[in-house]
Length: 168
Picture 1 (tube, one colour):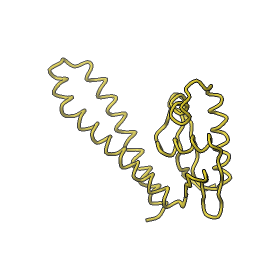
Picture 2: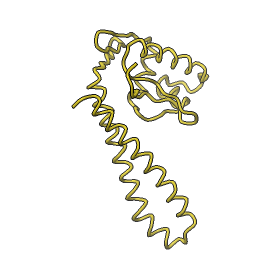
Picture 3: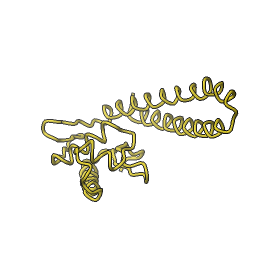
């Protein structure tokens, strides 16, 4: 198995998850307009079936992301707070590494800025500007590593660490 195969499956599962989320959202909107008797029947069958499949797709996507970390050759050393890729290694400060590890543990899911502050640093009182500063530092270090891993940001969803689709 090659990293390009894994990227293919990641793309497939992302598409399937996006389609399922959209379909589930439309069904739930339509259910609210149905009489209660019809709603119970539909919820018991269609919605639960799609929701179950969506959970399966998410688990599979998580599996493929874990496999990609292995195949891409990224090594995380928790004791030294370093990440190595091929012949390069980068060192993180304590806070940078805490942030990186939290993003990796939730990859490919997005985490809100507030949740990152609370879960990575156990301090929800820090300003989000502090988080953005550390995100920029971690992004720069990851870019210097030359690996395909990047930190993405989506408004109202937060940050996620993912593998980019093309090598730089």
